[in-house]
Length: 349
Ligand code: PHE
Image (tube, rainbow, N blue to C red):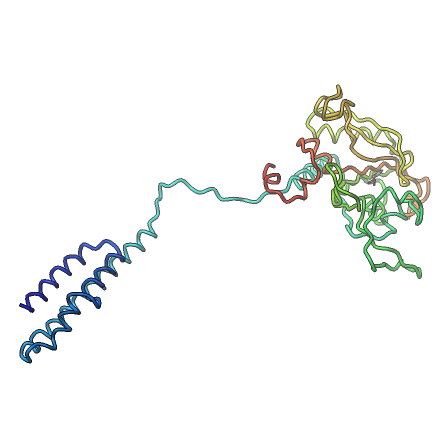
């Protein structure tokens, strides 16, 4: 009787193990057939009440059956596990590819590259200078003497407790974050003789409140063309050529009298509005013109400070904002977006 019972449990168990679909089902079967409350366990417990003879017969049988069930469950578990792994490794070669996200250049870099390409195609060289400057290059050499009110035009960041020794003099000068790219004019002229034409793009800093058209960190590009017979006509021609290439349409420029210590005469520089072409629209507040930056004929004092003889050369220079050009070209209405790090802005370009 008991023997038959054990064999019945075995057949039933093996059948169910065969049918099991997953690890959970196998676990349940293990509890059902081998667990503490299983019929099997009850039989094992009741062995003690049997006669010695029966014990000898049933005991080993019960044990082998128990082992067999256990082994079958283990085998089934292995098979199911290997199936799960295969499932994971299966590759659907017909599935559409996932798009790989790639980085790209920031709009400012794109525009700076465009500017550099246009100027190098016109025979200009690209020059460079440090973002952390001495007072000499940022101001003195540009004819903006110490304690002169003209310095107020540049809200400058001074580096605290940092001074630079002036060569061959027992004097020290302050260190600044350059408020414009004009210092590169002097650095370049100290090392090169005219004739030459350069542009110098780079980062500038001003200690001022930010709003939609002012940022404490921004980019300018300086232009400097020096030779023996350079005049305002050259300046106007080069500028119109550049802007027409940059905006891919005919651009005319307008010069308005202005003042900079390092140019004489000095101009404010406007281009005709790229949206309405000069008729007047909301983008140019009805004026037909967009302000671009400052320019002028290089002041002889700057040549002298750079080591050139007075009155031997003439040249023109300008300093234009790169963000300003990008804003006009790409219709961006807030300069603060450039350095916001906002991907919704950055990834549009
Ligand atoms: N450096 C001037 C500024 O940032 C611009 C400028 C450059 C004007 C060169 C004249 C000539 O305001």
